Image (cartoon, rainbow, N blue to C red; front, side, top):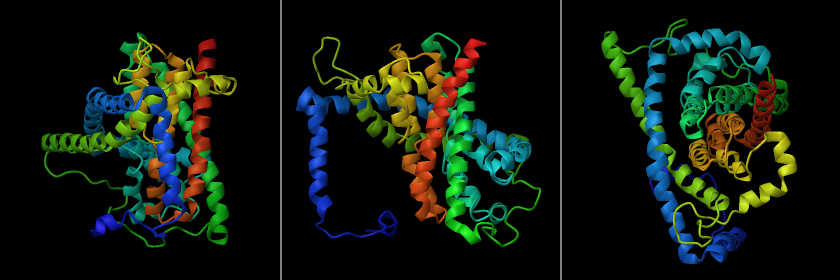
Length: 394
């Protein structure tokens, strides 16, 4: 076992412990849940066929979006738009988020890419020097709230032809909802971190001065404007490919399971092993919780609950599920607003928060970060729903 593989294991347990016997039972019960309704052969065939269709119909499309938007974001960064946005957003950060102005750069970079992008900033000493000890861990919540924002907004808007209406206003409302969720999540997290650090809370996170980038400057690629444009486009496209590849496990695994929990049998009422069949469990649960979900999020169909549930683990998988529901005519513009807010605010935080907090040397606060962001994501969806309702009334 090489060193990289060892990095994935952080502790040890006895070779035989309670989980050794409990987990196989849980796993067997999970598959039995599907096999009892669908039949074992149909269950396996449906899993494989659904994963294949998601790979061909959804993952490749999302990858194409990631490549194009990666190139665009790289161009914006190369020619100073990111620095301009950082300069304009700085006055808002302290009163709104309770963070120094430098945190605005984290908002911009994660919006243009993904949650872990903010970790690259934390490696810069000049960036770290702007933060107090209690503020630094909250960067995980702030960055995750805007992760994949550009891709989420672009993808949701691209569903306009499918839904036969312009979704521009719904996407903008969703963006506002995500901002509300980010404020809630970050502020709650700051309360936890200030309590955790106590007397050391107001000490600078990193007392070392200086950094690799001179004050007031930004790095650019070498060469003339033409070569810089080509290099920026190609580099951004490569990052888009990496992002597209990275969403494959989330889409194929999480979305396959969620869709099998959402969908029912074929149109004939029988299970055939075809793609996108399922046991329709989540809609049944949503029906019983409609008295809560309807006033909070305004979902137009019980199946819609699957999107935010999927976004907990992978935003890319949630996008693919949104496209599937939209193609079946199960969504309205208000749903898109809520989905945009929750997919962007949560953006698969359950799969990234632990590693991000570990990278920031804040392992003891992982649970607090996840709790804060769970509340923030719910607030994002509620805010988007009611903002959209109010706009419809005007």
